[in-house]
Image (cartoon, one colour):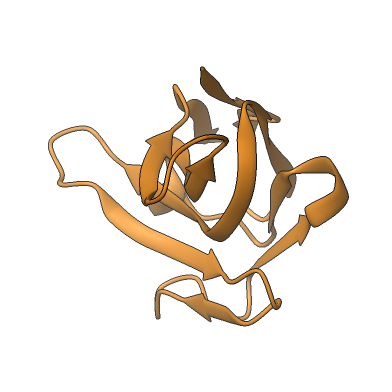
Length: 121
């Protein structure tokens, strides 16, 4: 069994900041890429940021310069620092881990349950 648990969402005013966390636990052998996606009401889920196990990062154009993804491999945790928030950043944020479970040969995608971020004055 593998679980990804997100935390850190909430209500914030425009221009504010939050730090999202996502901890993976369970029978994990190795984690490759971790990522954050988001989905706003009525919209498709979109990629926000990715980070490899070597620390290479990639961002959606809409968040470059405002969001920072990082990870702690010892804790199997990925973070998303979100700054200069805008109302259009309002969404449910989901974390993903592309990982290999103990006893398995292949890597597979696992998702968290999501954390709500609402940007409003």
